[in-house]
Length: 101
Image (cartoon, rainbow, N blue to C red; front, side):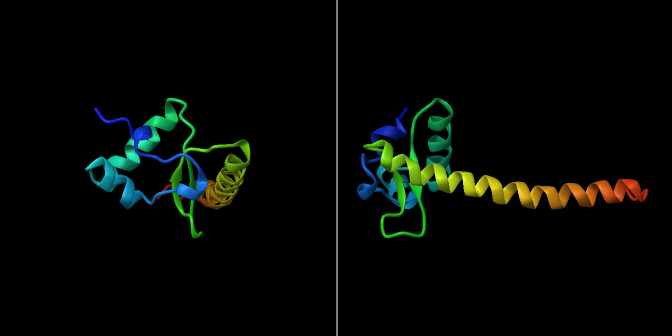
């Protein structure tokens, strides 16, 4: 079985896209994404960036390369919590009104 870490470059300036990662691994993007997730679950530090010239996946060289990834993930978590809160409030209101839909 292929180790996804063997295909993810070291250093933010060498980040590669998901499509490039899948191509290098000779698999589809969905499988590559699952392999990245599984490696992260096992404790691998795989960073990613988006919307930049160096977007993609990379293994950090330094702590400074990890910080932007952490900030991005924390921002996503905050946004998801806001969206979730709205959905939970809707459900709570429906229950209080007797509409369990």
